[in-house]
Length: 75
Image (cartoon, rainbow, N blue to C red; front, side, top):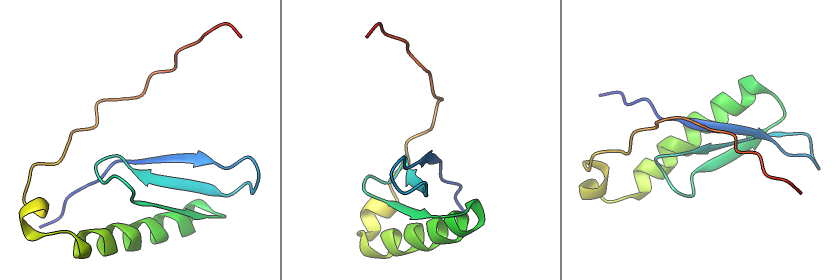
């Protein structure tokens, strides 16, 4: 069975690398210099993450990504 996970992608200002984190899997993240490498690394990170959690946890319903919203504040 395949499950699609939501990955938030940001650019690290110091290294200029892309950093991806999975919203449904706390602590599951990786980085890469290109989008293609990030996608490959992210698949591997998700697979390893899922291998390390208990079967009971794996069978629980995943959270559902709703969206992103930018909020402006005065500095």
